[in-house]
Length: 136
Image (cartoon, rainbow, N blue to C red; front, top):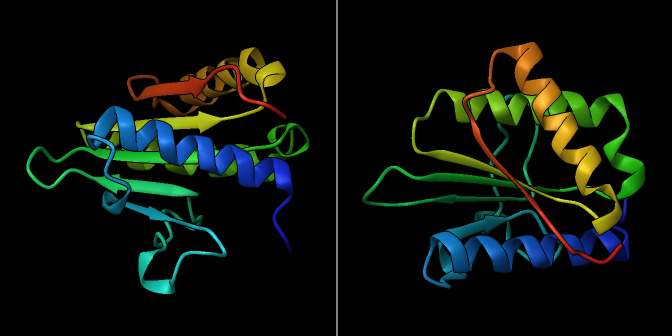
């Protein structure tokens, strides 16, 4: 299935934010699931799902998982299972962060969804960030 323009923009914003915030602007530290990325530069599956972005800090054990979701995607069961899988992965790694990029009008819903999944699954200790003010 082809990526929508909105999803592509959300992934681009996600990559820029993660690179700037955690990797001193170095995008080379990130694996990105994009049609433009060669196979060797794409993330592997995590608990059965492939994230849009993953970055590993070499010296500090940092793991940052990033996922972009459009409005329609955010409300389906597949997405909820995917988010749960990523939170589970992060829960097993003390220096991990999960970052979710959604259109600006879905940020409150996204925060509530992550909190609910974390509480129900026992992963509420995972650090999460929902990016704000993104188009979509």
